[in-house]
Length: 123
Image (cartoon, rainbow, N blue to C red):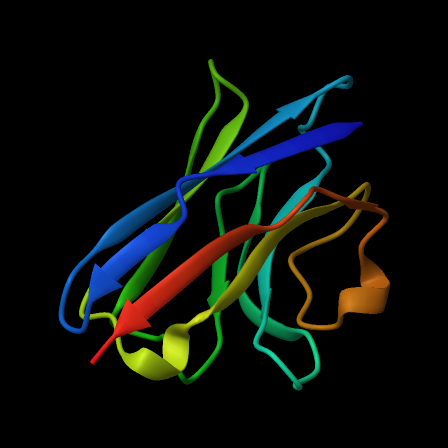
């Protein structure tokens, strides 16, 4: 499985960005896809996840109501729509996939990782 993340950039506080993660290599009906982020000097943290089969979603408390994770089955792509961005959202964002089960908040639960895409939110 290969994951290709894109869509990061520089945005002012209050603005929006949409990240994309294109997944290739396998059928994804049993997979869960997740987004994590890592800010400088901090540990990688869970942002959101989606179970591919039933579309169930999971969010970190810090982004609930501001971020939305979604998928496009035909494009095998997962999106992270980020609204009302804050400076504390600044981080490298990573997409990840786990082969079986529902979305999980623990990074160790994921089997595949994409390269990161940098999101910078200026105040």
